[in-house]
Amino acid sequence: MALWFVISLTSCGTSRIIVKKNSSILTDQLPQPNSIFIITKEDPNLADSFLIGTIATKHNGFSGDCNLRQVKRAAEKEAKKIGGNLIFITKHKLPNALLNPCHRIRGNIYSVPNPEVFEKEILWNPNRKLQVRDFKGSTLDKPYVAATNTYFGYSTSVKSEENLVIVEVDTYFDCELSYFKNNKNQSLVLNHEQLHFDITELYARKFIQRLHQEIKSFEDLITNVERIGNEVNKELLLKQEAYDKAVYSDLSQQSYWDEWTETGLRELDMYNSKTISSPYRKD
Image (cartoon, rainbow, N blue to C red):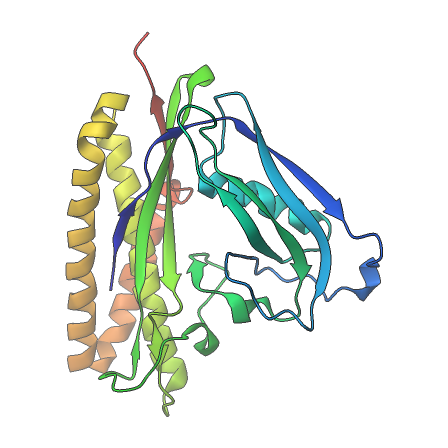
């Protein structure tokens, strides 16, 4: 299944990150580094984890990078520097157009031994393949051996000093809406489900490709971005359905779809950053 979401346009101050490290925690006490990083608002059970510090984001002025996506990325970068792999958000202040147009978060930084337990969604990454443990949805009364819920979405921000509006696109796997039943052909089924994720990434790149081709100004973006997104998403849904139909009727078709998707991703590799910037205002 593919979903579409829009994060509203914001113009805001560059985030400043304040990290206070717990001096009683020694580096050699922490688990080995893990590529998985979690940011959550739900209080996790962290009895076997280390509280290694606190974090707070602030802002400077009214231009910069401080939509929620950007704030989380900045917080993650700083938390990793002290060995953290999970931030539990204890306070989240929403933007206020008059007083402070930035997202601001406070939280605790933890080092946890198994961060994947806390994952609710996974960003597409060529080096991060899906595993059975990533499928956390209930299999009760479900009709298929497995089902994958993936989608792409975009966020926008304005850098007024640089006269730029920036669109950033991400591709997601929803852990809790995806399920995987025990079966004899686990590796084959897992490959099939991974390809659903890869196809979604392919169409996320098609979306950003169309933005590059069709968006020339801020006015173009406001007028056309949702329409383009909806059109690409409809194409994605049809392609996902065609993929399932073809493979369910003939398992030998899986190799064709593997090659088709790999070729498509390679042809659109120039859009793999899934980012576009356009002038915010005309000179």
